[in-house]
Length: 395
Image (cartoon, rainbow, N blue to C red; front, side, top):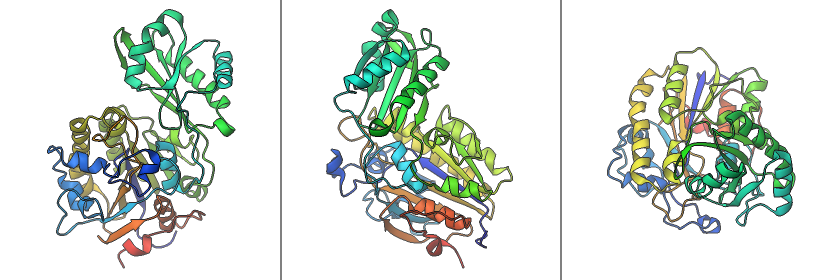
């Protein structure tokens, strides 16, 4: 390892916490005014004292909030180079994979030939087969699912195939097995980013989704910083959906899917007391999954403020050779029209005793993160991103 003085990197992804429309937002059906950060900031219930200190409002072009007069972290915004605005493609890009071709989406539902293959594999009929809100689809199709045993299959604007089933009629492990069968079918031209199990409970019309969601992602299509670190014997610890997003590849350990953001933050705090060398890669999904798609501005703001409050104890507990990176994988502006993700820049905040609090401006790809982490640990990685380590490392 080169002598950076850095032993551990905590990379925390605030799922969907974008910071302003990307230049190509219109190509993805999004308004030039979309900004998850602005909607949350202007809610009036997001004082964000710690993110402000780190420099979130000092990031170029965010156009909201009050900048710190003396931010303590390096700060930047990053543009997504890949053609997409979902979880898989965003995480893959920050890890080093840039995709010029978008993953397939199905605005009119899945083709009849695919549905036929799925029904044969499942031994059950399929309901819905169209883009749908996850909460509305179980309300509209839940009773028919209970009466017939047919599975609810739906999609969204993202590259996903989702399967919803009532836990009393389809045990969760059986639902996961259906998802594995769907994953085997959805390859090649139909290689959607994720197959998602969506178990629910309750009685009509009061169905609710349970926390036993599970994602079955496409295997990464290139080398990632996770692979690079594990190859040289460094630790790569996943918290939250990370193992699902990367198909477990490159991880030396996974702490599993978080029940809530609070659970994920608790796991991350516990890692501070552990002796490891390498990367802790954390996804906190509540802002996206619970509030962003439902366009719940106050809920999103409260979730982000909970994270900000947590930083008050996490930052001073960091060791001298720790580095914290905070970013996002896409936007999901709760103030925007519709229910889908939004194509946005994402923020990047970097903090630690070895880090200079500089303004890094705007970067052309999320892959700068993977390149920089690989550089910290002197791990060979070929990617379109360039390391910004020389700009932030104190001499």
